[in-house]
Length: 117
Image (cartoon, rainbow, N blue to C red; front, side, top):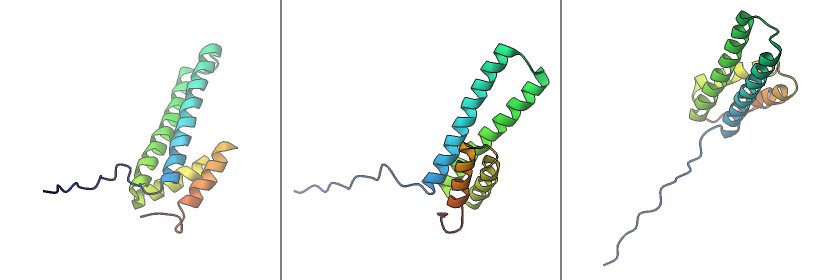
């Protein structure tokens, strides 16, 4: 009376485009840290108007949101994730020096040869 034990399920399945998703997550974290630091320094100095502060926070929030969305969609491997990733990578290039390095790597990993469908 031998019992058949089923094989263990794969608890850690490999997702697609892991490096690219990680890059977008890192950049979103850097933007979040920069936002907190900016708010702290602005609280200390009170140098810009509330309208300007709101616009800056809105832009930083949108950058964080779209990088998180890119990270999620890139893991799924769909075409809209690749497009969003490339757009966000181009915007990363403007954030010298760390964003430039992350942007170049993101553009390389979203190329046709590196992309995993």
